[in-house]
Image (cartoon, rainbow over all chains, first blue to last red; front, top):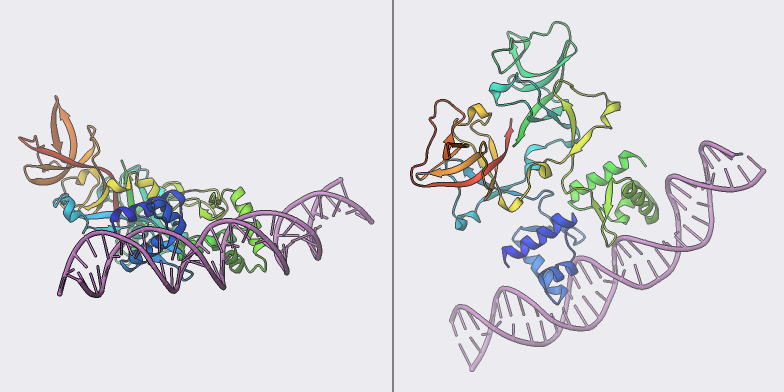
Length: 188
Length: 188
DNA sequence: TTGACAGGTGAACGAACGTTCACCTATACT
DNA sequence: AGTATAGGTGAACGTTCGTTCACCTGTCAA
């Protein structure tokens, strides 16, 4: 069983947004018998490449197709031989925990610049989550929305920017923490 | 047709990693006839919530489940009423173009700190892509891998760090551009 | 009061589904 | 020479699939 066959199945999945049936795998691989497809699938299931439903239907191991994860930047790219060993990961599962409570916000302003969050970036925030000290939060202070570090200075909640230009904010009367920033995504 | 029904179908999709059959939708909704499910699906298809295969099979509109996209940080969170109007996006489709050529690398070192890329971040890189001036690239210079800005100074390729601590590199003999950085992902 | 219409029921259809069994090669290893 | 073993063929099975048709409510407008 080659990785090429797995690739064909996953290409089908990406195109049709569902896994192929056995007849379709048969055509995909050029087999003349459904049974060949059936056996192929079974060995793939044994290897953990794909899975089967309780009703026997073929399903992918993850909803999202994985991306290969290499080591660090300094380690660079492995040789094609080692590449097979490389780990894989799905971005979606990695970033999103509670989908219903998760939102994307576009960053405007440079108040979190020194934290590596730049104007134009997208922040992935989770609503209704209790902020811990040091978390980056989306807050409404005096009818204004901002993104700041959530800190406590002798028991008093303080919102601190990651940019010396902006002074810390100690909310006077009202402070609403709307969401906690869970991830930052920047696309070039 | 309520959004709750759509939610049930998508919850099924997330759990079983495939769309339900009509009989399954029937049970899911508490219908007593497959036909009710059939009609429900048809109106959902008309509204563009889900799609049908050429063979009549039900497939989701996207492979990945979408996340709601709000406006900017400053705009804050809309009221629940407006929320329905909010746009949605799938992270996977947004970030990944050519899946086979896409890799994730962990960032080590602070050479791109001022570009908002910090140690521990993940960079999503695409292999075999021609770098343009200003792109961030993963390069091998004199047997060392680094992440730098790809620049041209009077026709001469130069690798510039986004951190004044590090001087620009003008490759002497060998320079291999392995990949171009397409996105940065940071998780807290 | 009538009629349209959206939504649900129930039964039926052929086609396609996943699965099984028996058989057929090749190649590789005693 | 013999025999496992991996991979492909071909036909058959009961089940479930998507789809259709006829019928049955309600609700709301004319």
